[in-house]
Image (tube, rainbow, N blue to C red):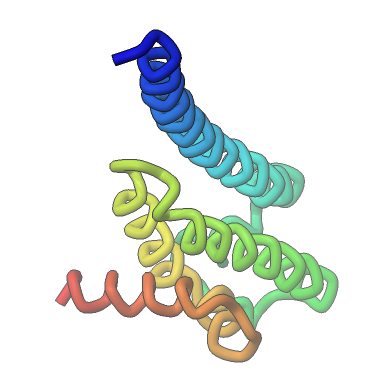
Length: 143
């Protein structure tokens, strides 16, 4: 074996190793980005409820907003829209969340269970198929 063949073989192996590390770091970055996006969207949803804490019951205590004032109903609908986008982000990012994806999907199902306004929005507006699949999976596991 000549020196040039040896150098070529070592270079080929080194290229494969570098590519493998590159894929590892890209995957790690995707997971990190998914976490960051979910936390940022969750913060936006929760900040709305910090501003209007009396509306919390419509999202966490299974209360229907039928008795809400027109002004509060407008706020509730806006917050519901934000929460639905948040839940959708969780559902479409679950595969990128390592071992935590299942726990996040349970959260999606619980939010669906405890909020009539969220159930209404997810029924009447278009959201990702993965979100609806996560809710169906939660309902099946719960029964």
